[in-house]
Image (cartoon, rainbow, N blue to C red; front, side, top):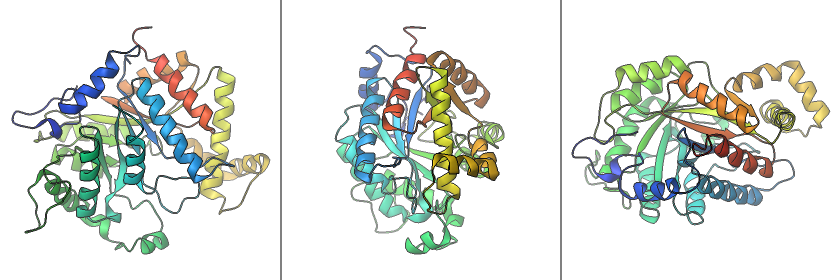
Length: 363
């Protein structure tokens, strides 16, 4: 459980016992699903084969509604650019749309790639979201630009902007707290909103920064697993309490493909691997399943498989056992799940089955 420091306000802490967030989560806890592990969802708004951006966004709404129904803590959307299979580039706009069609679940960025933006712009965007959906908004921040050099040029960003990430986080935090670091400039909306910040990372850099600033730390082990245990250990060892957070809080990413049978889950896994291989190495071409399998055999498979180092695949019983073991291995306080089934129906079913697997009432 996250604990607030003395003197902090309800909006300072992203935990389940404070302010409007408490009302929302408590409502869910009174329902039929009380999960044994705090569980959240990471949604990239994938554009599946044959789907459109519009249908992808509609699927994200359905996914958030299903997650809310089954007691997940939050849904986060990840910023990506120039990727034909991902529709979550305008993160704050997507959060606003989903927020209007949900009631209690927390929504946020997992994350905003801060080198792509000015801190003031992000403070204004998320301050607006907080004004629209009080107590429900999170702001996860990443250092990677999330794009190639041409895309960075199109975003009009300095290639060296990632070097100022720590300073930019502090500037953003000050805007949201109402104590601007730029004389005469305030974030309106945003000033005094204290939208809770999270540092995202896949290396020791983010662990050091989150610990130094006393912020929650989310590790991207769902696609970059190598440094998970070292990063979490570093974060916990170096953590310094802050106005937002009294004790360290770790969120670890994990892939999940839950299905009614093990065979169906494995079939979904192979389809997801094909899609990933084509997205990463297909250079914009269209591939048949057979061609995608050849791509996997010719080297893409090793890269894709490494991204699935941490993956719960199978029936609810298998999923539950895996996630409980992974929570301990990662030394995490919360897991954020990337439901990786290749269809909207499969992802929605995975959301439901995973919640059922961790339903303490049935355990």
